[in-house]
Amino acid sequence: MSRKAIVGLAASILLLAAVNLSADPINLLLNPGFETPASGVTPGTPVNLTGLNNSGGSSAAADWNVWSNGPADMSTVLVPSTLPGGGSYMLEVTTTGTNGGLIQDFLGTPAAAATASVWVWIVSGCVGMGSGDDGDTSVDAQSCTTGSWIDLSAPSGSTPVTAFLVYDTSAGANFFVDNAAVTPTPEPATLVLLGSGLLSLGGFVRRRTRR
Image 1 (cartoon, helix red, strand yellow):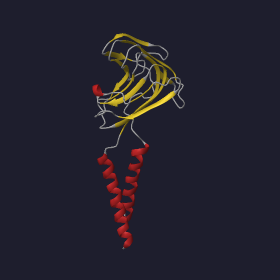
Image 2 (cartoon, one colour):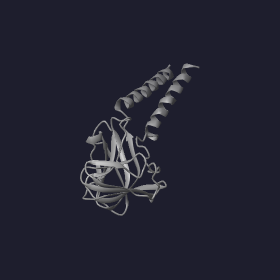
Image 3 (cartoon, helix red, strand yellow):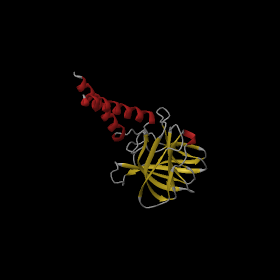
Image 4 (tube, helix red, strand yellow):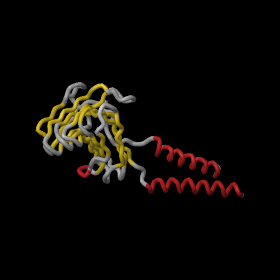
């Protein structure tokens, strides 16, 4: 293979990598669309937890738990999704407390930084979402708008990013969630390396052209 062909192939690979960085983001969450019910739970069957206080348990959706930082009763149930472009199910969350709701930990696959998002339909109360370092995770975006789908999105509030939460920020709330995502932010060193490689190849091709 000629040097020109090798340079062209390398440039193509780097360009494909650049496209993949922006076009094919990784979602750190499991069951992000709430399509899979928890083991032994039939969609439409509520999972009720009473007497929570700085404690939690399983939800009606696989890979998702609930947690309450204060006294609360909590209920979750998978119901048919009404989100445009959503899947078969969404998760309804009802809590009587404050600062509690859904949580998912991904301690085995942390990211240095990330952007989190989730679609929320609020029936009552206020709801916030956030991503960050496990117990240091806080609400990064919130809304009290009821009766419509809202896309809550924000960069992670702490690092490394090992957890995602959707909590009520009022004295109790009833809301639906669907299509959640935690997408790692490419590290600056990776982008610099990619850009340098492309510039170097471009310079090499230009030099050969001048000859």
